[in-house]
Amino acid sequence: SACGRGGSSADRAYVAIGDSYVSGPALGGTSDANARTCQRSDRNYPHLVADDLKRTKLIDVSCGGATTVTVGLGRTAAQGGALKPQLDALTSKTKLVTAGIGANDGGLFLGMFISCLVKATATDAKCATFADVYAPKVYAGIRTNVAATLSKIKDRAPDARVLLVGYLRIVPDAGNCQALPITEANRANAMKVEVALSQALRNAARSADVPFVDVRKISHGHDACAGKNAWVNGTVNVPGNGAILHPTEAGMRAVAGQVAKAIGHF
Image (tube, rainbow, N blue to C red; front, side, top):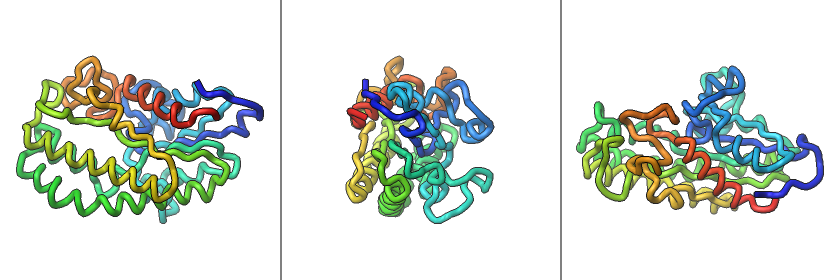
C-alpha cells in the first residue's frame, strides 16, 4: 500500500477524470446528483485508490459517455451543458490525476458494441466494416486528442503525478460463451479494435510523457467469457455487478491495484 506523508488531505487532492470505464455504471452507491447523471459509483477504482492512499482527498469527476472534447478539450460546457468540463476540477494543489479516456472519441466503443458485440445488432459484415474501414480512421485522432488532454492536465496541475489508464479487455483470445455469444469473425475484429485502441493510448501517453497503466495486458484471462474470473460483463444475464460490457467490482479492484502500483510512493 502506498504511503501518505505530511500535509492535510486538501493538500493531497486526487482528481479522477474519465468515462464510464472509470465511473463504474451499475456498481452500487452514488454520492450526489451529478454522480447519478454520470453513473458514477463509489465502488469505482478512483474510490478504491483514494481509500488506499491515506490522507488523500478524492475529487471524482468521471462521467459515462465522456470524450476528450467533453472533459475539456476545446469546449466550455460538457456533458450536454449541465456539468462543467472535468478538467475544471484541476488546480495547482492537485497532487494526483488519473485519466481514463479515449474509447468514446469517434464513437469507437459504442460502434464496436453495436456492430460486433450486441447480438441484436451485430453482424459479421457490419463488424468487419467497422473494424477495417471506420475504426482505423479514428485511432490517430484518439491518440492526438488524448495526448492533448494529458498536456492540458499537466498545465493545470503542474505539481501532480499524472497517469493514463487503459481499458480492460472484453473479448477472449478465442471462442465465445453464454455471456458473450458472438461469432468468431466478430470476436477477432473486436479484438483488433481493442488492441489498436490500447496502442493509440500508449502512444498518446508516450508523446505527453505520462506513464500508461496498461490494464488490458493484466486482464488476460479475465475477459467477459472468464466466468467467475471475469473483470468485465458480457451482454447476456449480467448479474447486477456493473453494466453490460463494463467493469465488474473485481475489475475495478484489479485496475485500482495496477494504479496503486504505478503510483508507488505517494
